Amino acid sequence: MNISDGELMSGILASNGFELVERPEEADVVLVNTCAIRDHAEQRVLGRVAQLNGLKEKNPELLLGVTGCMAQRMGEELVRKVPYVDLVMGPDGYRGLPDALGTIVASKTSGVNGLGAESAHAGPGLVQLEPRKKGKGKGGGLTVLDLDPTEDYEGLELRRTSTVSAWIPIQRGCNHRCTFCIVPYVRGPEKNRNPQAVLDEIRGVSERGITEVTLLGQTVNSYQNGDWDFPRLLRAVARMPGIRRVRFTSPHPNDVTPALVAVMAEEPAVCEQLHLPLQAGNDRTLKRMLRRHTVPEFMEKVEMIRSGVPDIALSTDVIVAFPGETAEEFQDTLSVLREVRFDDAFTYRFSPREGTPATRFPEEDLIPEDEGRARLDELIQLTRGIQRQINQAEVGWVEEVLVENRGREAGFMLGRTRRNKVAVFRGRELQMGSYQTLELTRTTGATFVGSLVGDGSGKEEG
Image 1 (cartoon, rainbow, N blue to C red):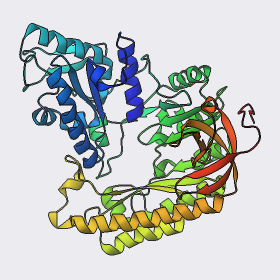
Image 2: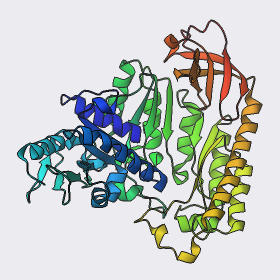
Image 3: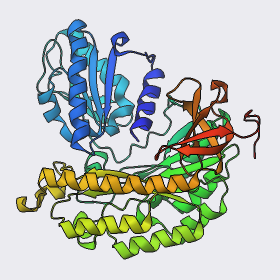
Image 4: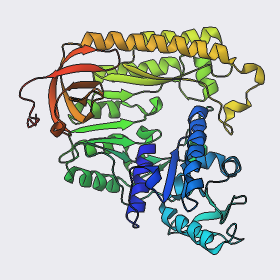
């Protein structure tokens, strides 16, 4: 979603006369697009913004902005921490980005420190631009923090970063209120795009030669717009001319239905891959997380998915050291992971997010940092071991990959299988965006090394 938002902002600015440059040193405007899921990400942003301030000291005309979920979450607090930032803009403000930058330039030119009592408005979305109360140096800054329930970003041009695959947002915000998650508070309630607008966007992507799309949403499979639910939309996307692979992320287990599994099984374009967040393998912890399902219910979904799509690759998210999690409950989570055997897992130690219900649990429920790190280390060792075993069993398979990028080593290319496994192979850059058939010859545990089967022309269409 952050990549997609970056493409959106780049497109908005490009359509208003801005040009993207390669290096911050060449820029008139630098925007740091942010995530607020974990504290570690926010600390990295603060460090990066401090580095960029060095450029601002050399070039006082440089405009420096922080956008995205961290900007929405921190608001004026961010202004106090980094007073040299000119713009703090949340996710619903992007339509007004050019106007906001113009307003800041005008305030600097006029020599007014701050923007006065009146608020400006940026574009038809009527996103309020509030004057920044504290600033530093000539001019002032803006905070754009209103969440707009009508903003769907339709009609705006994106500047896509890939010519191979496309991110397609179909949903913004979230109606779930998991106690650990900041997203509903910084993205607002769930907003689902018009299905015809989604299909039109994908049609345009296909006409540019892009053959793989990923549908994006915070709980993507809860999508509902009129009589269009997610299975219906997924089937329609899978049948779009020119689209050869369809993925979606990130679904919620509660909305994995027989209808969805049927589409995945029946539509050849839908990839045999599903991200299914577990978060915890203990019912008491899941209840405290407000995940709205139990471990047995989750396991029923896994069984249903694997019955419908037997060769599916499953990935997951897991949080350890959630407040109140006992050592026995942590072991329950490990037991579920051993039973399900996910192909990949994104693992985290609980990160408190100010404003979420999880920060209001009693202090005695907090897991000591050293214990939390120990649990995370054990979790990582288990999930990586399972992944290595699964991938070692797949050595020798012959798989089709979509070539996405250059490999790290000269002369190698990187591709991804339908089951979302990454493979590198000796190849040529002209193969970018083509489909190649590889024999998977070995694995490092997380990725594969492969060799081309056939002439490697990429012309076969299958």
